[in-house]
Picture (cartoon, helix red, strand yellow):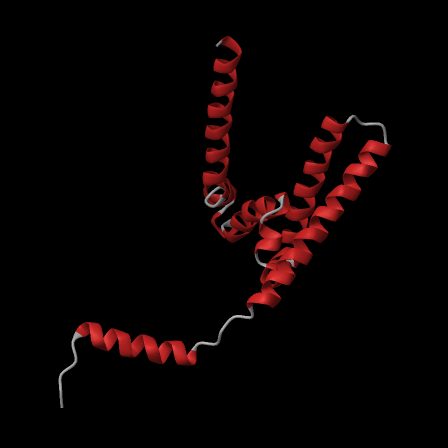
Length: 152
């Protein structure tokens, strides 16, 4: 019997794995993500229209809508509903601003056993921290570009 090389053994193993692992239902996943993401955005639009009808200017209504949507994402994560939505919708539930709230609250809930300071306070931004840093750095860079455009 011929001794197989490491590369040949890896190829045989990968072929066996490929034959066993079920293929994901890509179209179904895309449709779920589209529908759930669209529903979240529609809810956000309804909330914004409510604030606009209440007399807020567009800029203030947008800020209030963001606050409400972050609260809803955090609240639904806290009671365990948003994670169930995320299992079905995938990126459809992650991309809107509610997904950002979900990432922060999920970390906080995971580390609550370690206490408020060393658990929740210290580790809450494990996932959201890089997003916040990236947003701040990009805002600074865009601000610099605008500042240079004004003076040149």
